[in-house]
Length: 220
Ligand SMILES: Nc1nc2c(ncn2[C@@H]2O[C@H](COP(=O)(O)OP(=O)(O)OP(=O)(O)O)[C@@H](O)[C@H]2O)c(=O)[nH]1
Ligand SMILES: [Mg+2]
Image (cartoon, rainbow, N blue to C red):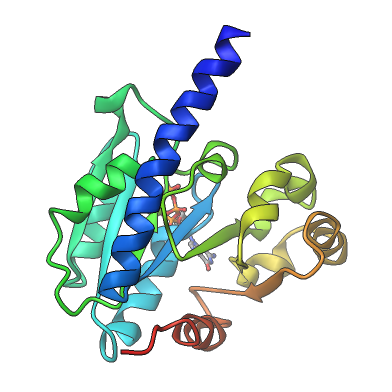
C-alpha cells in the first residue's frame, strides 16, 4: 500500500539523520536524554529539579519541544541553562520531535563542554516513542494521576525507554490508584525496566535519578 511505503520513507529519512545525531553526540561525548510522556506528567518540573544540582558538576543544555508557546523554554532559561524551543505548529503541528529538528536545534546551542543534553519531547504518550532522535537514553515520565492502565494501553513508549520516572508520588495518599497494579502493568510490557519514584514536592527520587544519570556520563 502506498501509504505504508510513504510512512516507511519518512521513518527511513528520520533514521539517517538520527544516526548523524548519534555520531555527533558520541564525538562530543554528550549524553542526550529524550524525555517522553503524556501532557503534563511533569517533564519540565523534573528538569527544573534536575538541572541546578547537575550543572554544578556537568554543563547541560536543553531542547524543548511543544506544539506551541515558549513557556517551557522560559522555565529552563530562568535556570541559566542554554535552551532552544522547537514549536511544531510551524511544521504542521506534529505531536512529536524528529531527528531533523534536533539537528537544527543543536546548531543553535552553545555545546562546548556540555555533557548532558536534555530533549523534552512534545507531551504525547504515542508518537514520540516512534521516532529515533539519535539520543543516548530514552526516559519515560508517567505521573501517578494518569491511572494504572497507561503502560498497557500505550505500550510502545514503555517498551523503548531505559528508565521510567513515576512522578507526583506525593499525591498518592489523595488518589484511588492501585500502585501495585500500575507497576505490574509496567512489568508486563517491559519486565526489567527500572522505575524511579519521583516527587518534585518532597524531593523523593531526585538523588536516585541523578545517580542514574551520572552513571551514564561518558569518560573524557
Ligand atoms: N503534586 C505534584 N505536582 C507536580 C509534580 N511535578 C509536576 N507537578 C505539576 O504538574 C503540572 C505539570 O507539570 P509540567 O512539569 O509542566 O509537565 P510537563 O510534562 O512538562 O507538561 P507538558 O510540557 O505540557 O507536556 C504542573 O502544575 C506542576 O506543578 C510533583 O512531583 N508533584
Ligand atoms: Mg513541559
